[in-house]
Structures are given as C-alpha cells and as structure tokens.
Amino acid sequence: MKMTRFENSYKLPIFMALLFATLLAGGGTGRVFAAVAPGVTVAPGTLVGAATEPTVISSSPGDRATNVPISTNTSDNVVTGAAVTATFSQPMDPETVSSSSPGISLTFTVAETNGNDVPGTVVMNDANTVATFTPTWSALNPNTSYTATVTMAAKNAAGVAMGNPVAWTFTTGAIEFTGQAPVSLGAAGRFAILTKSGITDVHPSAINGDAGASPITGAAIHLTCAEMVTGIIYSPNAAGPLPCRVTDPTLLTTAVGDLQAAYTDAAGRTLPNFTNRGAGDIGGLTLAPGLYKWTTGVLISKDVTLSGGADAVWIFQIEGTLTEADATRVILKGGAQPKNIFWQASGDVAIGTTAHFEGVILAKKLIAMKTGASANGRLLAQTAVTLEKNAVSQP
Image 1 (cartoon, rainbow, N blue to C red):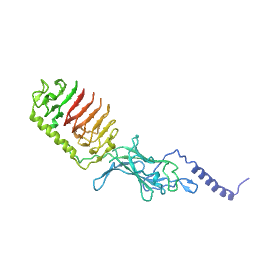
Image 2 (image 1 turned 180 degrees about the vertical axis):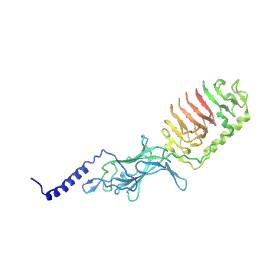
Image 3 (image 1 turned 90 degrees about the vertical axis):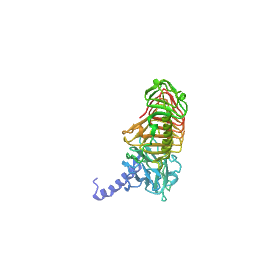
Image 4 (image 1 turned 30 degrees about the vertical axis):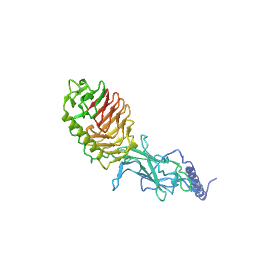
C-alpha cells in the first residue's frame, strides 16, 4: 500500500531517532579517542540513564602539537617540566583523577611514545574540571614525541565513568641552553688520567694522552710504557715507570691544584636547567645541553644520548656516585664534543664492563674502569684510578 506524504514525514524522524540511539549505544569502549585542540569543544558523551558520560573536551598541549617547550622557568628560577592539562566536559570526582604521589595515578598518564613513562603528579582545579599533570623531572626530553592518556577510570561527580579512553600526542622542540661556559681545567687539561693517589692497572690498557699522579710516589703509577699509545707518564719522583717516565713534580703539583679548582668550579655552578633528571637514572634519555643537578647518585642503566652542537656544554653535578652499567654507551649527536662534557661526582665513579663513556670526569673519589670499558675524555680523580684492559683517549 502506498504511504501518504504525512506518513513518510512522521516515520522518518522516528527512524532517525532510532538510528542515532543505536549509534550511541554502539560507541565501542575499546577505541581511544584523540583529544581536541585547546579552545575547541566537542559534544558530551553517551547518555547513561539520567547521567552523561564525561569526556575530555580540550587538552594542552593540543593533539599533534609540535615544538612544545621542554620546561618552564618561573620568575624565581624554579625550573619545572612542561605541564600537560586535560579539560573535562563536566566536574569530575578528583579522587579518580588526581594524585599527589609521583607515578601513582594510572588515570592520567604521560609517556614517551616509545614507551618510557614520565613520573609526575596530577592535580585538579577548584572546579574539578581541569586536570594538570606536572612532571617530577625538571624538563621533558627535547625533540621527543609524547603521548598523554586519560583512561576510563576517570569518573564524574555522580560516579559515571568515561565511556572511552582519550589520548593525544605532542612533540617537544630541540632546545639548547647556551649559558654555561666550559669548566677550565688549567694544567690538568693536558692529562688523559690524573690522580692524587695512584693508578692501578690490569694489563694491557691503551692510553692516548698524558698520565700522572701526585703527591703520591711514582711507584703508585702502575701503567707500563708499552700501554702509552701516545703521551707521557709524569711522575713526582724517580720511582715512576721506566724507561719512559718523566719526573716533573712542579707540573704535577700545578695540575693537581687545577684539578681541584675545576671540581670546585663544576660543583659550584648555580641555577640548574634540570634537577634530579630521571630520578637519578638517565638511561634511555636524550639530554640537551645545560646544567644538571642531582641530590642523589646517577645511574646510566642503558644507552644515554647527549645531543647538541659543537660548542654546546653539559655540566653534571652529582651528589653521590656515578655508575654506568655494563655494555652501555654514552652517545654523542649533533656535533657534541667530549671536551665540553663535565661529570662532577662527589662519590665513586664506576664505568661498567665493555661500557663506553664520553666526557671529562671530575671525581672527588675513585674512578674505576671495569674490564674492557673505554672512554673518550679525561679521568681526573682526587683519589685513584683503576684500569682493567681499558682504552682511554683524551679529547
């Protein structure tokens, strides 16, 4: 039977309403929806009874944002990592979103897109509509893609959960800090290895550059002449290795004094660009030039990259030990030079078996190179240096 025009116009809205309801009901909670750019609003979520599912209506940085600053610097020189915010469509239950303990909140997370989590805290604003994730790191990595995620654990004030997780990505810019001048090494700068209490060695090592020890006797220098690929062994007295040692107590006294001055210079630099980066473990990170400070020891658990130009300077202030794990590498990119990288450590320094290191080590205590480790830089210790079949080349 042919329908009248009235019947068609009556049934079409009913059909459209049913279709819309079906689409809402089949939204699919397995999908991850991208957050929109700041200032752009979207429709609220699916109706659940009399309540509406909350959603993220804007984010900062926005989805796919580029050249995002890695940190912010307040007027009183407090450096913090760039914050990430999520704005919700309605007031939220803060207990389901915020966290005062770094890394505890599993609802709002930020991670490098390759999988490394960023520790941080999440705080809601007074209206409970904006969540702010602040990294505990003093800066994010430069030139790195990050993914921020708000999971379905987030609930509104009525206890209704988000119907879908929301995720967005952003990329930080490549920022170099140029304010630090290199640490002056004075006469210590002519040495690949310089210590105050001797050099022990499991033969054979290969040294490119001068080596010496003072004020301890030259008998505490256990390098052999054959291990000096280039350079001279300087001894404070005639007890140094024969037949190649050169006795020069005046040079050594000056060089050791300059070593101590360089350590004091590096330790005394102020207003760090980064504080407690990586919570003391910098393995897997890419580090921009600048002044870094740790109130703990530092571990290089896996390869770490220093990326910057030929004149870029890194100064690492470490109030504890510096340990590089076995078979890991310090990698330089962008023209970075080991002569402009300074690792000042108040505790022992240990470079793991077959690991590779770059830069100048200014150690208050022992520098221990494990079997087969190598270094492009200088080993400058206020106690001893121990070698085990190592290759050390001064920059």
